[in-house]
Length: 137
Image (cartoon, rainbow, N blue to C red; front, side, top):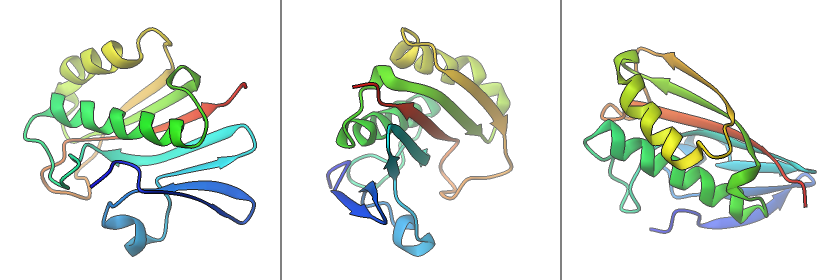
């Protein structure tokens, strides 16, 4: 399974869809570009084979890889990500998840938020990340 399967257009917007089972069930796109803005939906760290890694660090890496691939598929760059939002099932994961976020996005320092939630769509998932980007080229 590829991370980003399709790029298309809908209602004057460009969209990216992946193989996540929730997209058709709920009726959403992985990412949507309208003008210069790209919004990436809440993304859990699924591997290309559809499984969720066992560790928070691996889940965060996979989620950010999917987000970056989605932004790039819509013509943006990683460096144009302006905001991330992290939803975690245990706020105690902040140091571990924060390290991964800093490693991957720390050079661009997007605005970010981390919020503890009771559960995520996949019971194995411990982190879900959203992102917004503004394309400047």
